[in-house]
Length: 264
Length: 75
Image 1 (cartoon, rainbow over the protein chains, first blue to last red):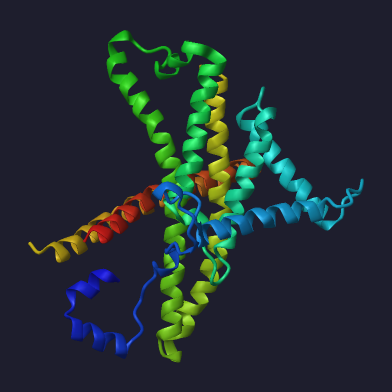
Image 2 (cartoon, rainbow over the protein chains, first blue to last red):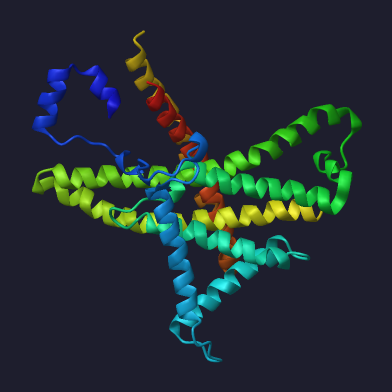
């Protein structure tokens, strides 16, 4: 890492680099711009590897569902069963967490889940890029959900939505203490939502990078151990990618529910 | 103190927060297994909450890891 590069003197670093491959587990999180499109000096539309892999995951979701449902049969085939199970799974999440009035949000929740899931999973392909390992991607999603929930609350309940910050059944004396806590916990929602996904993806892929480095550089007598562990950890990462997408969608539904159905 | 060694110490301290998450995961899965042993019929319903809880507890540990990365970027 650049830390060590500044610490060690130049010639020692050169000697070390010549002697051994350097471990750089954060290397595959670097955003590389393929096409720079920056109107008015704002780097808004540049096509980077992050954008490219987001496109690929969206295309994969789209292609999968189009292919699975190309000839919808009454008795579903294998792929159609998967597509229908996915539909029912998200439908269950929406019904369970939003309940009444949740139907209009189903398409958003469905596409959100599959976007996050496929971004997590395409990141496991060698030489690919995990779009969800960039804080800006997850923060954009989380802030969108956050502002949607605020907008919904004021749209449905008007100024009564502010009652959300006043816990019911509390003595009046405690209110000056509880209301700021409620407001802070409300403001912390997009932060925790985005950092959870980002940190899980970054940490998991960093561990994988370290394991791959060890299995590539250790002598054969020791390299099978990190290699075997990296196989196991890839399976764990597939599971974590699913769980994180699931949590992301569940929390989205919970936040929407909080704004739709005021007071517990 | 030199800034570079201090930042390494800080990274280590930030990552030490993982210990709390480990304790939490241990508690959670232990209690979950206890619950499954007492009431095997409820396993399918409860395991869903166990995994959600596990993801939450893990995320707390990873906040520490993110702090360590931030310190690494500053140092």
